[in-house]
Structure formats: structure tokens, C-alpha cells
Amino acid sequence: MTVAAGLLRRTDLTAGTVAGRVGYRSEFAFAAAFKRRFGMPPGRYRRRPGGADQEIDW
Image (cartoon, rainbow, N blue to C red; front, side, top):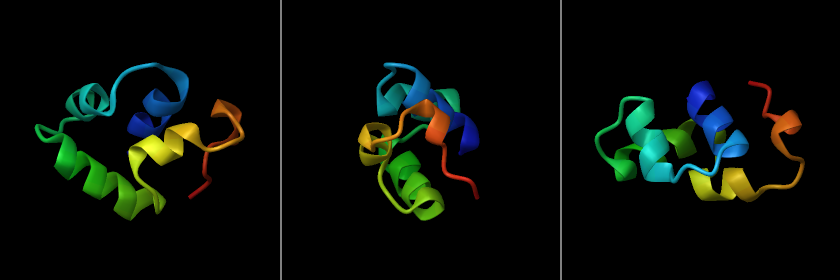
């Protein structure tokens, strides 16, 4: 999920493409797992203020 978070913040790849790159066949399954890990869906994570340098520190 850390790789996925970085791709979402640093690229223009769609959430579906990011899902495939990190091993998910389903964008829905990826979004659910991402939300469990980061507390927000991938699209909201990408749009949150702070830029790529403000990654969530888990």
C-alpha cells in the first residue's frame, strides 16, 4: 500500500492502473484495502492538501 500511495501522489495514473501495478485485479478491492490502511479512499488521498512530501507516517 505504501507503493500505491506513492504512485497516487506522484503520478497521474488512474486508481485502476495503480491497483494493477500493486497486484490487485479489482479496483474495488484495491480501494477497500487502501481505505482500511489509510482511512480514506484513493481519490481523496490523492487530492488531500500537502503534496507528495506530506505522506502519512504509519
